[in-house]
Length: 194
Image 1 (spheres, one colour):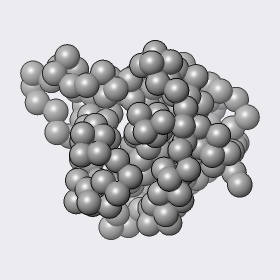
Image 2: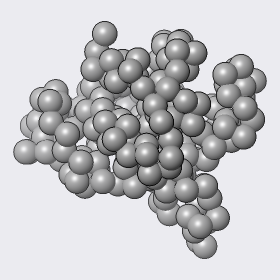
Image 3: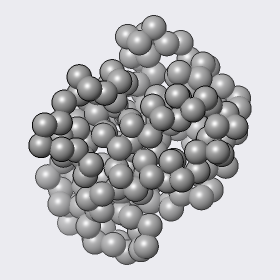
């Protein structure tokens, strides 16, 4: 079991952990692709973090901060936040050719949210419709005003507070403000992204 699965096993409900294990079999395994195809963000010590490392540091921070929302681990509310972190960049390189695509897919936020929406009945075996809608919103707007579905008058005040939380974790990681440590070596700027 890898370090992400260990965190999840300790902090997710059993049913959500089983759902995650089923979901990850259907997600392209891009975890060792760079979290930034341009190298502008997600930089650590001359390297670009992998999507795996970016997700790990967001998960650690998310778990540490659950109490802000009066949420405890191993509850459905915690599960939604953890799944939001897990899925927010799961399709960062799209779905048509995620292993050889040179650049990240700008609409990966919309893609992830639409996949949840298109499979709402599956998610509703574990979560309420309201919880699934929250997951979808966290994915759709995790890039904030830069999200592919945001409008000119984008305002977090119009969205649940959890959406801003996921966005903030993402932006903090992208700008080297979380730096959890114990990460893989990242991708050296001289290595290729394929």
